[in-house]
Amino acid sequence: MICYKFPDQATFHFLADDMFSEEDTLTCYTHDYSIHEIGSIVVDDETVIEGHHVNYMGVPPESWEPYRLRYVDHPSIVFAGTSAETEEKYNGENNK
Image (tube, rainbow, N blue to C red):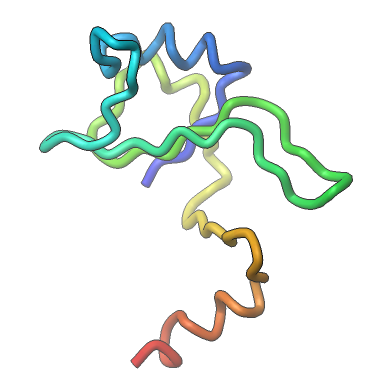
């Protein structure tokens, strides 16, 4: 998975124009790619990581390269109502 941080949603939509239907709906899954449009990331009540975040699997458009988050090698998602500690219980050896 490749993670991107665009400055805003409008920039992402402009660069991903061919991934939207005529009804202006993002096509999230095809035989060529899978995309997850996230938006700003809310860490807690006081911490919001601004920008428009997108996770992508497949061969990405070259125009997205300047927005790639290079420091994210293996992203993990912690869903609302859970914690990183809870998530760890279900990974690796504990998941057998």
